[in-house]
Length: 290
Image (cartoon, rainbow, N blue to C red):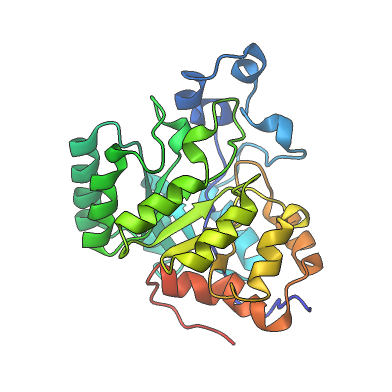
């Protein structure tokens, strides 16, 4: 169970340092009710320690890529922005783009996905059901045109699963919602992010059941990866579990890679977890490693 530092890692949740972290979460402060969260710089800061600092005087692209290079992160999935597009021009084989959506405006969202994909070439669509305003359950009809659009464009969709960190209700992200979606859209590739806790055992059962359902480890420091997920990756789920960090929101790249060697993945799992599964699920034009 030896960590493979020679593998060119694909990080499925990475970004550039925030200039104003509080402003990034304006959309959440509109729905959060408790004063402590509203006053916090980071609405889930209570869950993390030593969170990444704001940008300061650094160049955002140089700052992120210097850390990627140090830890052999060969490519990342970045939320589309002006900086991300500039970074892709500089590093065309290392920057892949995702689009975060709120399906409450169904027609507008479908058009946005299609237009941005046509102009810039998306790799994935992402969504935070508990952070939508109003919230939208994963299996809600408002998501269905978005799911079909992802199928039409051959894009996976990444959706938060489990109890959300911000102090908003969790029912819309219960893992059982994914069962209905996978039944109704057998061609869809859907990736659960942010833990799926406390329903991680159910997440494993559903991944066994549905070929198009996957999981990435975003927002969890490696020492806290759910045991059910580690056990599944080591057995029947080697092709279903993928690496994702949480920089610059809650976890530094340095912390992630200082703890990864202690994760009890079997030797043959590491290439799939760190790289190969992402290439397959996200249709990346990169070479797998063994």
